[in-house]
Image (cartoon, rainbow, N blue to C red):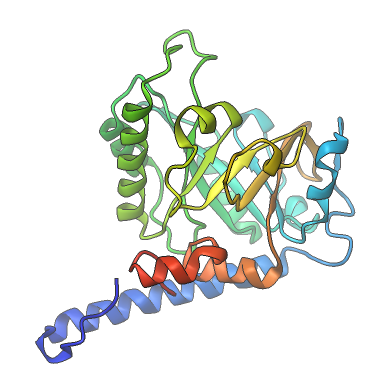
Length: 288
């Protein structure tokens, strides 16, 4: 939030604590930027990565200079040094689901990516038959509050695959739950969360909503602009059949929309660089 203009009225202890917090956030941002710079980059952005079933509709995703993966227990043991050596510039790791499930490989992947120097963040998969409070209490209990981590991700999709929770909630209820969880994630981590979603959930709930959050969209057969109405996407999951050294079998591959400079801006602010001026003016998004 913008600082008050009446500086003398601010207690000195508060000023000191703010300075310490800003210092930690600045160091964390610098650390993330350094990790990303070391993780790869060049004219041929992913020379050792591939796709078992490449779709021509998403071919341009591979031309974006900042690329990464997302993983869960289904990838099995991961050689994170090889993942880093392949040029991976970020990794999102499944942490929690609902209010009582932790991905079996979360800590293994979290620690492994950290040791290898791969910038990493955690994501929570929403279970719509559990209260938003229960889910965020669970997330806080199991995900480290690491200032060097990427902003957390809230994964919002319908749970149609689950026999325990096949229903769709009314839009207003789903949106209210989503907003609560985003606020709780930000309060816990100090970083503005990213919303991950798919085509169906976006159309049912998110279309025209929550423009002040970065969005990560799934589109594996066409560019996001063809599937998501009036949505600036920041991250694009363009295939689930990717191949990356260090990961056995299929893995999701993702691209950041912009340049290396824009990626550095995101790391420094936790916000979509295209919206930074508008959000910072509203006190929602400031440099660390």
